[in-house]
Length: 605
Image (cartoon, rainbow, N blue to C red):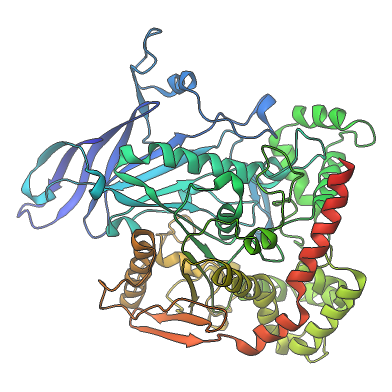
């Protein structure tokens, strides 16, 4: 139940709301939360509760440990009103302030300044207000109990950033909240603090994913107090967040918690989604050496040393583990753990999907039209990098496309030969092959995994699969962050779809939407929220939308979004490029190898 106190500041003629000032309170199992009342660009008021702790701060002895849910007695330290010893609930938690992002640095932008805090396991809840129209009153106070049938669908967003950067606070609810859904954004541990694997039973990895699972459980247990429906929770994410969302659909730890998944530009079947366990342990040992911790003795000695190090030192050291340029972009990522009771994932995602053990819920996935342009721009921005790439073409190609460490020598040779011939006509990189490199990167990292995931889910589960291609180039783009004066040469870059689901003021502080941008934002938010509400982005009740036909392995329908009023359904998108990768079969073969090598490590453990 949410209580709101609003003070609407109106113009002299009461023609428009300039601002809404006020507070909102909600009672959950831990106590009372105090949030703020805000207003969207369309003048729709909503409640915002930010910086809500869902786990104990993972600091000191809890570093590298599985997240522990936030206990009642710790809730008191954030109270606005002191609670009495006899009644720990007699207080109000201040949920009006932004929280810290998890420790990180923007390594893929070559900015190695460490920002954030280890105390970062917080989430934000944004919920529509069920109150009379603002213009009816200057002062409104409501205390409403929402009936179960009137509960809002819930959308939980997992941010991307290659598992090394990002924050829940970067994503403004302004656009989605207009469509009457509850939005939750979450933080989770990143880099080595979230994905360190020592090889011992105490530090097996995937802590960042387990943080996410704990946050989802928090939502399941508490969201009804915010007017959300705990039986209509859709998980969505982009990039590493898309991989994460899909992994939760597959993981036994999240079984039964979610009712739909949207994986944008990333799935659990991507070449960059999982790190072989042996490689994760090796990378963790390299990191320990970088911060002067012993790796030749007992694992416990290494971990005791790692616990004494400053978190910022650990993040700084992790940026030195790259092999060439910024590769691998993600030095610590999800793994298949040994089978144990707290495992997030101990079997290969492909095996889980094929066995029918993944959650049988509606699934949406897709890509942007030019996913590879951002990485391509980074490479070609520095001519010396292109020269270095060409001097060791085969190794650098497999490193950048993420199959170097997981392919057998024979598969490495076959894949590299095929990719070089298909995309580069057996020539080395130069400006004339810039677009070819972008296509190769897009296909290896995003297209193939989206196709593969869609095929497997549509063949093995009854719930529908929806596939999209986002092809609208708007007034702003993430490729503009490259600052290389080639703005007109880039297409629809990785992450550009997010510009039409969220207001990205963190990266684009001067963003001004053109009319066509607003039309696309209206379409995208409508499709995404429809999926959350109905499990279908274009239900029959929305006659104005072009019908989005489900994907099947026999009829691969793609919903191509080129503008707010320019949508079409196409069969077999990127057919020639897709067939090339199916013939190489790199994803499935490297998955088998990853499984076999990881099993060897598990057996040794």
